[in-house]
Image (cartoon, rainbow, N blue to C red; front, side, top):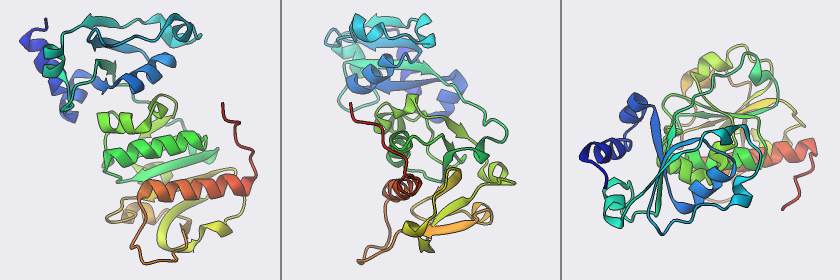
Length: 262
């Protein structure tokens, strides 16, 4: 049985300020926890009811430098799980991980494809954008400080495991983009047709918020504005859908063969 202090600590991780103070975040749900365990994500603690089936030895046997750290596993009854859960309907597993923020290496943006998110505040959209970056094998994702927190549970769940595979860096975009030598493509309704893009092995794709688009400071650093041709009456596209179309065009233009489905 959990103490009141433990329950309070785990419930407090709903809020970013407490996540930052404690250096911890939460992941709930059988599927996403299993996906992260499969890649050796170093959880600190796992709270689970007896309904949760931990991934078996074959999955756990995959070599990984992260597997040396074994999480503390605590079995709970349904009542205690309901007390700590961040969901209206509790899952059978509630995992706690440690915040790990990776600095952006110098000159990294001049190599490969980067997806930069400028003020994308919807957590579900940010998680979906991580999945898109994973699908198209982008080299990294940048988040401006006013994006949804990458350690928000909705971001992690929407990423469907891509959270653990994509290199994510939280940066001041104007600072990071200053002096970049590769094309910086800004998605904008007034831009040129994205289907006319030439092959680009190295580029930064900037996606602004759905409400205001690119911020002024970032817009000044865009070297080329691109748009997706509109044939109907919709005012705009969802940020994640727009990013997927742009990434698909970049990959198609380069003629890179996709990874075979497994």
